[in-house]
Amino acid sequence: MPRAGLGPASVTEAGAALADEVGYEQLSMGLLADRLGVKTPALYKHVDNQADLFHRIAVLAGTELGDVLRDATQGRAGTDALTAGTQAMRTYVKDHPGRYASGNAAQFTGDDDPLIAVTNRVVASWAAMLRGYEIESRQEIHALRMLRSMLHGFATLEAGGGFRYDTDVDESFTWMINFIDKGLQSLHTAGSGPGSLAVDGIEPTLH
Image (cartoon, rainbow, N blue to C red):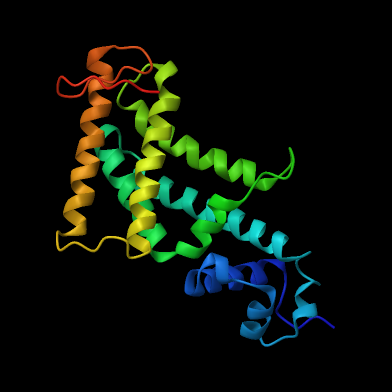
């Protein structure tokens, strides 16, 4: 008989919490069963297998991150939205490194995969922030990829203790967001095509 109180949602929540605690790569069905006080086979009444558990955690993380970005950026635009949204994501990754890693590792399983909807919601939040910069539509995907790459890199390095110099990490984060903000503003004022980003007179070549 399944343990009373356990179900797909509660097992997923427990798995996400454990992933945050021990790390996404260390999470296993056996470790989760020990945490829940059940035998490992009991978990398979609620999730299909470890891959299914990880996928459910990814959907949970995407849902939570979507809520975080919505709450942080609602009613904001441009620099204000960028600052609030990036700080909100940074905080989420620091607080939930395991489930965030699970979300990044997950792959779509089909057209009806709920992960598609939650991922699109997160992307839509970033796109809404960029809209305040009045970037040409053909450049938006480049801006989105840049923003995700820089923020993901910073947040995951910070969560993993990767910044070891004495310089204050908050100052570095603020510096990075100001740099991104200036770059995004320059896209609108320069009116350049994709692949041509002019910042402070420097025009790098993108490969």
